[in-house]
Image (cartoon, rainbow, N blue to C red; front, side, top):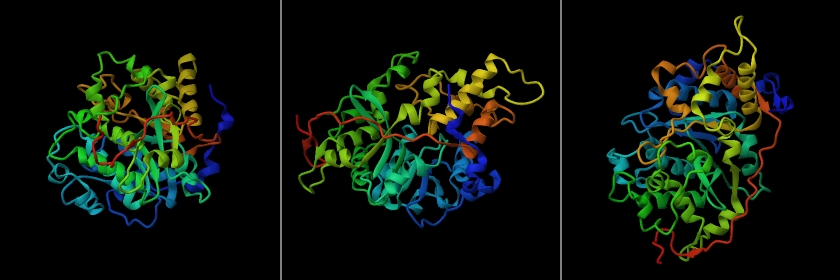
Length: 401
């Protein structure tokens, strides 16, 4: 299932690791830190780091450990008076009024959608969703190619095929230097959707997006959903993706920015099924099975090395060797995903230590995420944009049928 030569041990990468304790790093993450370069990791939790689930906190703490001193991890929030409030980083002019007023009454994920792009546009770096376990250094995933003056790559994202022959960039992992023109326009389109509303209901019918087809889940996920998916509601939930789709299919006659050409020349796409959802793919998206394997004891006097143990060993080591990250999403709930995810299981209070319980395969995954490295190359997604209609229209103007 894996080649053990694909992993390097801790002695090979130990120089990169931040050796502070979890408690020291957690305290540090709750303070605001100066932005001194483009090497920033940005994430958001609306109620602040202290209110994260324990497994999510450990994700972010391990980013700090794994990336070492060259990168600064920033956890921003939407808490009034907080030192790490988003309003200490980004001017209110870049947000819709409902976000400023704190009156958004839909899914909390949409607050994160509103903050990720202005942070990247102003400061540069990487956006990573907090529910992401990082398994290799971001330099090796994409940043070396973005930083290379000989490389055309200016923005990196993971992508899934939501529609036939079309890979859609996701927004849970984004990397770019500051002042990226695509990022700024993408954000402007999304903010325009929020004019006069407090939630995303009906965004798929908005004049800026209604010409686009609704998004559909990849078949391997949709086939496991126990109830029929409301794809219009799901498209509202991922309207942030749709704004990117709009931009990559138009050329603005007013300012000359050709989103289609820019996307083709400067986007570094990675295959999400390989680099983000590999753990789910090899376990058939069975969250309970993932939980059971990770909760098994890996070491100790009472451990029996049987077929079940070997399955867990192969699963975790294959993940450590073959993917850049493990994204653990929560489904959007009513109107969207009904499938229970590993994140939902670890959220339960009785499971708050199960992602890192001593001696388990989960703890082995955590250890490997900071102490092991991979020898494989992270490949650019081999996909050419199909011949699609490019709309010649202002990027904030409706497309007339």
